[in-house]
Image (cartoon, rainbow, N blue to C red):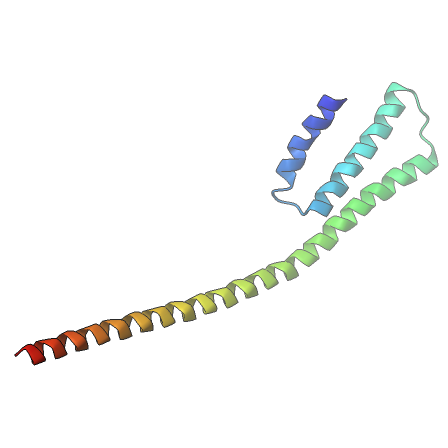
Length: 122
């Protein structure tokens, strides 16, 4: 059992690369619950009642609804990420321009100082 639990974390880790934690855990839990129910029916000859069938249907429905809600929220989240990226790009651009301006001023000051030194040496 411990080995199978450890092995189940491999696909969970792969899924977490693309899914939010809540969504991945919901799918993982739902699949586990449904599989255990089906294994119990097949291996231990447990009867399928209307209540069990409805409960399994609700689990599947719940995961589908979480997935749909996640998709609508991900568009808003993507918009927010894009906005933050644009703000960071503007800040970086302003910082780079400021740095370039400081470098130009320093260069101009050195050129002026070198010119003054040449003039005073002559």
